[in-house]
Image 1 (spheres, rainbow, N blue to C red):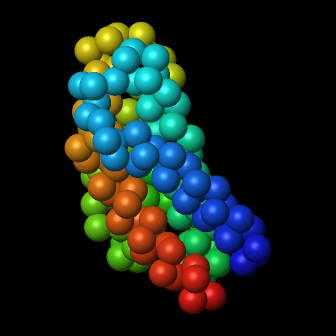
Image 2 (image 1 turned 30 degrees about the vertical axis):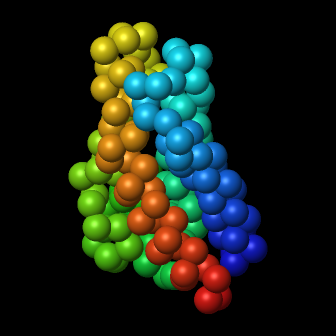
Image 3 (image 1 turned 90 degrees about the horizontal axis):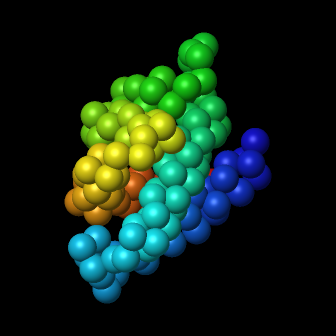
Length: 138
């Protein structure tokens, strides 16, 4: 179980670093439409790896109690276990991720890009830092 957790975390870490790297020298407003589409793609797989890494960590820690394994339930458990501080942001990430799969509305697309830059990335950084410390000490 620990090997799966470490592997999942390494994949999450790589995805998070790729997403973060977009914003190191640029703002979302400086990106072309193709680059913005790439940011959305990076966000989608970073989000997927974030919730799945949280699931694995909760399982490893014995904190996952007979629940349906869904992103929403994982975020609730992580919040109640004080692993994440902002359950609302993670639920919003989930809703944004789901919306991106079904919309071609440029205004919604742009709004989600702003959330990635201004809200989601900070929350993913907090999660990354927390998990990095915990998993390195296992």
